[in-house]
Amino acid sequence: MLDALGRAIVTGAYDETPFPTEAELAKQQGVSRSVTREAVKMLTAKGLLSARPRQGTIVQPISSWNLFDPDVLSWLLDRRFSIDLLREFNQLRIAIEPEAAALAATVAGEPDKARIRAGLDRMKAAEAGDDDPLESDIAFHVAILEASNNAFFAQFRDVVGAALRTSIRFTNRVVGRTASVPDHAAVLEAICEGDPDRARAAMRHLISDVLNLIGTSDMKSQPVI
Image (tube, rainbow, N blue to C red; front, top):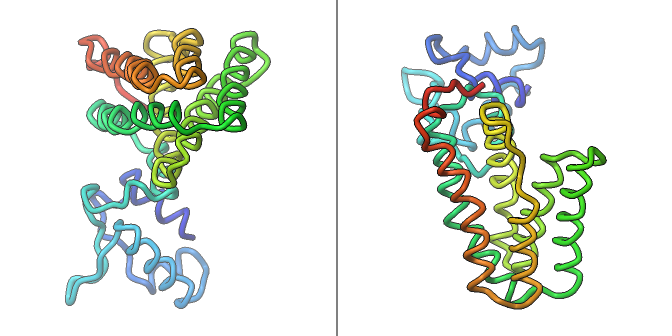
């Protein structure tokens, strides 16, 4: 019920329709009032709903949503994205991932580097049709966040996953592009050689390339599904 309601809110099902009462939800979903109440509480905690005296439960604007919540990120993937939201995803990435790569170049151990290398190997395999291009790209970036040995960077993995799923789905459809293995290899090489400045620059180059694509006039005119 939480998933169904959260997805409906995020994808705009209640943009023009008042959010149902607990009694209406219980009847619609075929569950008890207590189950309904708990689902509403959880959606409220995620910032999607709020309860106000004499107004009932109302859907909150996106500015109030907890966009770092894994459930909200998952539901956002079903939303009709705007170019602005896609851009914001990658602007956030460029503020975080280059620094995580630089930190990884300083503190990553051999097991950390091996996981990044495994992600790159998967990307190479994907080019040959032996792995999933999206999942291998996500594995590479998540391995770098974890290699920073910083718990806050590591917990950014859900945001990176959602951003990549959205960006790759969009850029591949519009311009037929896939992730550049050599550009990703440059990040790995800098980390393995313990060069934080080069790791930072290489990661920034990766994400800037996506932002540049988003900013072109041709892409602005394309709908994002």
